Length: 197
Ligand SMILES: [Zn+2]
Image (cartoon, rainbow, N blue to C red; front, side, top):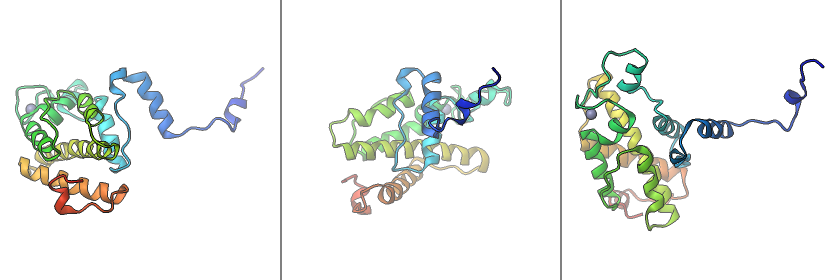
């Protein structure tokens, strides 16, 4: 018997990226990390970014140091901790301020989350409707995206954004994305900014 080509020709053998990604997650991630799911309310680039952050796959100083690309793993913003995804996106001073403001805006009790994994579990744990849970999850993904973008702007473009500007980005991007991607076309900006949804 030679090389069996039947398995390759089998029409029942189909692949899609979602299944492949699930396979990778099952192999790579502790069960606790499977809190991530794609949100239809944000662009795929945002879903992919957060998924990569969860598996330590974004180009933080710590990751670059690990690959011998930069000499120092420390956070360029505070200089007191390694710049890991959890640190830069949640626990560094600027990120903490942003999260306090996001939680306040969304009427969620201030929660000292220390990992992205813990953060992503919060919407499902709240006593709100399933639509609001989806909205909060999308806002969290958008917030992670905006914090990372502000970090990159500071490092690569020497542009510094304060907490107010980052929150402004989060509110406007999350509004545009959820309004036009979801079934919430009746969202209004003036109520959105008070999180009356
Ligand atoms: Zn820091």
